[in-house]
Image (cartoon, rainbow, N blue to C red; front, side, top):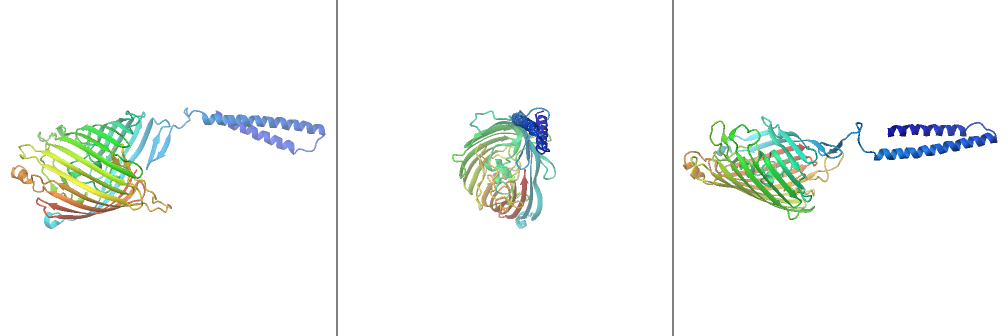
Length: 472
């Protein structure tokens, strides 16, 4: 209605101006006629001035009017790698999310000792698509499926209630669904932001992953605490009469967390119990293993039998970031309880890594203190059409050790299972990463693993890996 009023009065202004122009250029008249014309012009000018004031008032009213009514679009759009849609009042929000990682692995698997052929292959390492959002301010959801491999696999799938803590807490959330059990800086940092193509060997061997459960996460800029109780993994809900269960807790502290320096300390604990299989009626025991050269298409050259009916995991974390330099390391110890019917021993396995990286182009790793993880790095000079940028170049190196050899001889001597591949793997990695933009990267790495113990003793696994990735 206000808009129509503005348009109508605009027409009146135009008509009045036209009349004035006509009168001004009319044929000469008598002095009496001129006086009458001048009076008419003044009257029209007064009317135009009045209309101008009314138009200005109408425009001001239109600008300040509340956005309501069926004709208004209650929508705000923000670009965060992909469009993020939200209502103007923030009550609802939705974003499509995903990632694509295309890998090449070339691996010499030392066939002379291992008997395994060399690998020259490509794969879709991750191909995920999902959504996340907000419903009624405090209720959040996330659902993501990975289509890489031969079958789809549910990843994050949860609903949560957030923002219930004090204002000083940047994170306060309760989650229910399928999400990561809170252990290890390396595991909890998204695969989009990890420095190397794969995570450290102990995260694979000790099965750090997502499970269905409930968790509580709280934190601020310099600290975080996360804990939860979990049952089966998504996709295995119908496998057990009695679910495998896990309880875990993690705490982090960042005494320094600013734009030039970060110090991170963390510790976590997890207790697991194996589930009872529907197929056999027996306990579905845990096994522990990892891949050679820390590459996903390599075979596993240290590998325990299925031996554990419960285990306890302890992890210590540390990281230091100073401008473009970063150092990170973790130590993990796993104590395994083996049923007396399998082997009358209880081994302790451990793993650790230490790495260093340097952004040649001056970027700094982005640390998120309220969750104790590394996030998205901001590229100073991104590469895109006409930008003239060179992206972010990162050099990195890692030493990674996993030892699954404890009590291997005693386990084998018991006679029920054979620990022939229980051993130790030491891996060196050098890597070059080119982050073209905040959301795209090319990664290259060379790695060598040395195997000690078991039937693969003395084997040297050498591999080259390359990855192209994008996320949104």
